[in-house]
Length: 112
Image 1 (cartoon, helix red, strand yellow):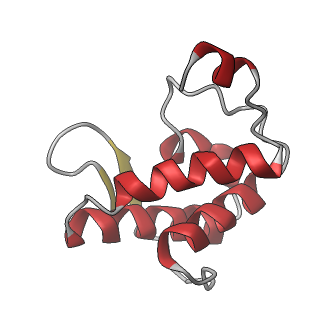
Image 2 (cartoon, one colour):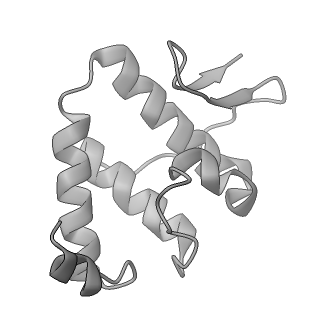
């Protein structure tokens, strides 16, 4: 994005968010199947956890100032729908789940 684009970007604006999700989808489409599933599992886990605020930074890189997203659950549902073409379904991950947000081979990983 250019400086002007960034100055005119508002995360809670539907059109701005749509552009962001288009770019995220383009990146997502370059991932392999395991990486794609890990990203989707992480989003599903966060949505199903009941603690979206607690896990927010696991879904959004620290360098991105998205703390001002007004409706975080809607943001994650819209992102998931953009990436997959369907709405996420609630899942029971049980109590033995660990969400890992680290560089390396695990990337964002939901492990049992």
